[in-house]
Image (cartoon, rainbow, N blue to C red; front, side, top):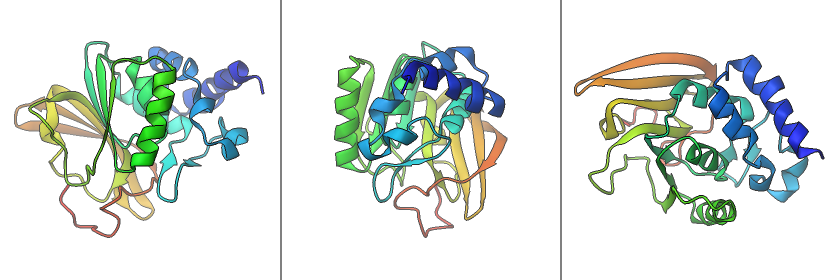
Length: 218
């Protein structure tokens, strides 16, 4: 496989036609070896327009959703990021090239350890990986973030991650149940005001711990 051409094709044939037009983000996607983060048995699907299984419960986001969420968030070099759901670590590695620092949380310790190994191989020094359950919110310190990326769906998002944002900060999240899910960009306009923009319809696996709690307050 010509991986350089394959990465270019992902940008040109999947991400840009679906609204992922952020040039800087697309370069970060293209220059991060996606194939290195894909399980060996799915190597032939590394650049396919699908979610790739990582475990019995976790999946790697499709390239077009990665591109679209990065386009919407428009991450800046001086911004701090909280990622909920490390998964393979690929998106973590990409985001690390766009931001000041990223903290990524993963409930599955084995996945987190594998992701850490890959990130170490790439000599990334601004990514901190942690193992934990973020389904009920997350705040280990008094830190606030400019960006929160939630890489699974939640039945309903109401507030707990909102208050981790600095003013001007943004959250990407997929909200809904069953086949009625929408990707949303939520921006903290002021201390007590948030603005929500619906981006597109999609379907992602539900965050562990929230699978059957359709009325859970997140």
